[in-house]
Image 1 (tube, rainbow, N blue to C red):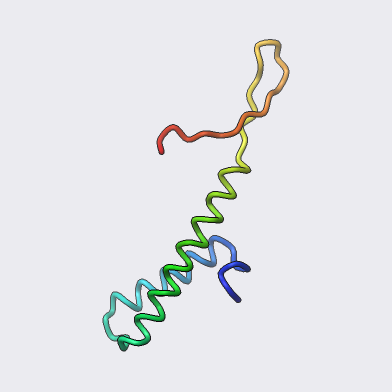
Image 2: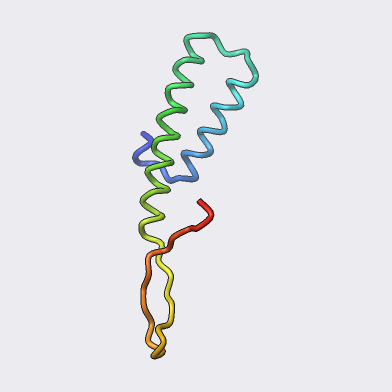
Length: 78
């Protein structure tokens, strides 16, 4: 399964596996480079999924007249 067909959680789980393997330091150089490249692709895929999710998140707020209004969620902490 490639990164585009995986969920965010599946991508993160695979990324954690790659990080653990690289941190152990017992992976041959050629395999380390392949893992690093896969990890970089996973990071990009996760970023894309997060961007898409952020665009979909909306807050329902109430207007002054009591009717609901949809507003795009903006995280002021970023």
